[in-house]
Length: 112
Length: 114
Image 1 (tube, helix red, strand yellow):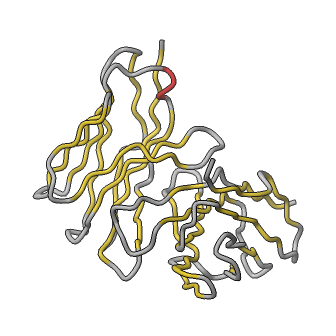
Image 2 (cartoon, chains in turn purple, green):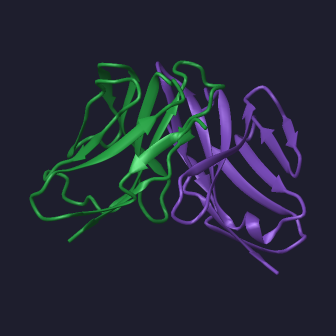
């Protein structure tokens, strides 16, 4: 079945690391994505990882994938107040078109 | 700069009225998508189109209609049959059939009931 779960809230202090977690159920997922949504705006692609990779690093962002446990995480190093937003993980299913299944989103609040 | 433009940013609907949300892209993408976002929920797929003059229902198509007469444009009509239309609507586009080509999103239209 298609189901992607995330915790709803995360609160951190500026300068700390943030870790946002996601679990998914479909083992046929090909790519897994992280999107950021600021208030009143659309989704901005942050990074993505192919399902046969374990880790991907992109500047302050580190994505870890545990395919056995179907667990995906996004670590933001040196979190800034501008990182406050909703973060969505999404899995891309192996269908006839690029179907994305989104999690409910994690609201990250960064306090000074 | 290439991107996706959604208009209007805010839209109000009266009872029994159809309203149309605009989505235009200049990314030269063949595939386009419409999603609905409700508070505390992820995005749900309404309709998608992989090529001009072709479109398919997504997971929550009831009460909505689309057209795809031009590659650049994928308007969504929220009909009076949609009894709970208040939501944030997002349009996206991508290169079709390749999972490593991510979907790019517009800035959304917020629809409310008068």
